[in-house]
Image 1 (tube, one colour):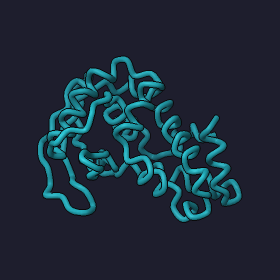
Image 2: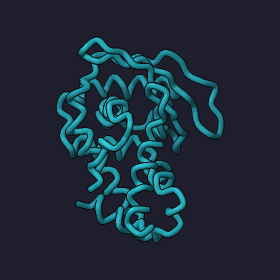
Image 3: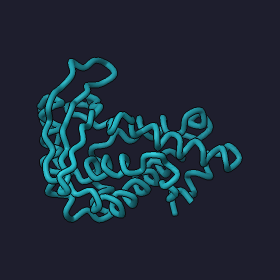
Length: 194
């Protein structure tokens, strides 16, 4: 079963990211810089994390995560063999998988404060936004968010915590699962839908 996140070397880092990212509350796109967007997202996150059930996490992931970009990248070379008409089910499964993990692990990493500390110049590959996250325990972590332009707003494409880009963990997890199940991405879609 895919709930084997314990196989990931830095599950704690992923949990910190999920706690930070997945608790973002809903809000409309606004004309703002990537840094202002991420500060707004983080301010909302601190409030929303306190009530972070699976449905709440799934809702905010759908709104703020670059779902197709992250989802197709996570499939690696198997992306081309997943029929396009099956992608919506895969995306929903991926979101629900992350939301369940967030609801389970997020409360262990409650965020006290999140402050944007800088923004890179940005290019077609996105804009890096640096933040300092402080947990209720007093521990602090630097996070580098990768924010992509999306219509008139932004989407979060990735985050780097303790030197690791988080989507690489998802890529490894999903691609290994597919490989272990006959190189069939449909096996992953079925597992994510459970």
